[in-house]
Amino acid sequence: MELVDAIEIPRVGNVFLRQGPRREQRGSLILMGHHMIFAPQADSSNDPNNTANKEEFCILHRMIDRVVSEPRSRDPNSKGGILTLKCKNFMICVFEVLELDECMAAARTIETLSNLNGFSLDYPFFYRCPFTILDDGWRAFDVESEFARVSMNAPEMFRVSEVNKDFKVCASYPEKVIVPRGIGDDYLRISATFRDGGRFPVLAYFHRHTKSPIFRCSQPLIGPTNRRCKEDETILNALLSIARGIIIDTRSKVNAQSAKAKGGGAETQQCYSQWRYVTCGTPRIKDLHDSLAKMVDVSIDKSVSSDRWLSRLASSSWLSSIADYLNAAANVAQCVACEGTQEVPVVVHGGEGVDSTILVTSLAQMILDPDARTIRGFQSLIEREWICGGHPFSLRNAHSAFAEGTITGPYEAPVFLAFLDCVWQLTQQFQHSFEFTEGFLLDLFEHSYASEFGSFLGNNEMEKQKHQVRQHTVSLWSYVNNPEILKSYVNVLYEPNESVTWPSVAPQSIQVWERLFLRWQRDWTEVNAIREAAVQWRLKERQLASKALSLRRQLVELMKEAHLAKTLNDVRVAD
Image 1: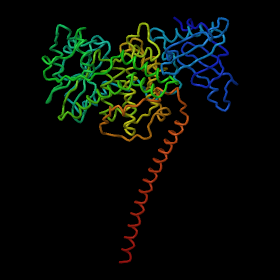
Image 2 (image 1 turned 120 degrees about the vertical axis):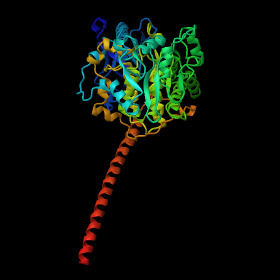
Image 3 (image 1 turned 180 degrees about the vertical axis):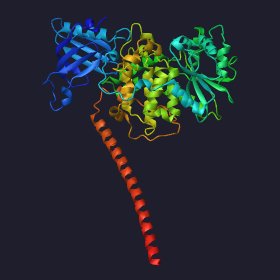
Image 4 (image 1 turned 30 degrees about the vertical axis):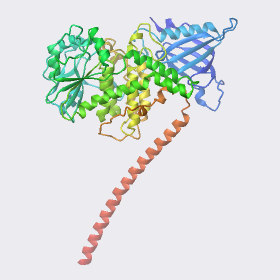
């Protein structure tokens, strides 16, 4: 299929923008293979002094979540239609079109182009990078480099295994993984048959202070027959040294028990006697999807009263879901850093091991590891845990809050967005401990749903390799690490903090991420101006502090010279 074949009408003229990222104005809609462009008329703006209103804007078709077209009036004799585009970043654009037929044709075109099967025709494969790539983002994470870093603190504990060469053992794992040193590949293969989706235990993080590792995997396939796997038990026991290990299940006890009836389950005390099993219940992906839909629904409702806002906010359960994830991650971090002894291995899993498992292990690293709170470290964490770790971005992010796919509907969930919200909560509680800004998190949110870069394409590394994503697209990190772009993501308040950033999960500590959910409902001009002024004052403060330090050094040197001169003068007088 050629994209041009899906375009029923390439241009719709004399369109009135009733709602969107610009003020009300007339213009034209241009429909292209990957973008929809709104080009305002030269004299259409109601505010001639605002040049931003006169600029065109474009939306990737993949960013559009739902398309609604309807007649402008119920009167059968009236002409015209209303075209409503609800986007995955929660922006809503409403256009008035003079001819209903043109409105319907534009709607069908956008509907088709925003819901293409697969991703081989997506924009990243056609994007031509306008900047010079100084730092190849596809190398943001390398298993061998990570292994070398871990080996500096644990030289005899782990090894790099290529058991998954050509993705023969696990489709959602990369070809190289870090595993316990004393475990052979044959044991890993057998363990994979005992774990959901073949996701046997692999290293997620090693805490150098306590020598405690965090491993992640999927649920064991125990089933109603109480199946066991001695090879899997051996792998987990190989992690033990001087203390009992801890298995943290990100499902509730009820969900874990119901999974057993379907062939899954949890580790039994009889077979894993040296491990303590703990449940830290987090939302199921379906519940999380519904929660986001309710949260966005109340956020875009401009007529809601204060009491209704609070009740609908609570009923959405979005903030309580964020608190659950933070609580689970804090429990993992506590087992690693505060269990009272060193070398306490922690194994984290949920069901399939590609959603809440990855979220919790990633968030635990944000709490424990100061390097993960830097821009580069955060990139490496996302690349390692989410992209290489097998989070199915194409399935989970096929739709956002306004729609569900016919085929992908049961698999859609804003898991990565929930992770970003959790990180944002941490940045609000520890504003000086994170090198990146809120804007960086918002850009990651948008790029994970629709992007000109290939980082979030596909569901795993196997799909990326099959479609040669790394060879034919540009990594998002190549853009982020460009010096001109990178400086816009740097938090000027950042001060490296080696301490553990323990989050508060009390209800009064969990906030609504206003820049995310209320981004298109508020005028942020004044807030942006205040923030920019604060940034400039912070930079000025640093310049003055640097200048003061330089002057102090000069003063010390002058005092030394004066003291030396006085000493020489005293010697001459004495002679």
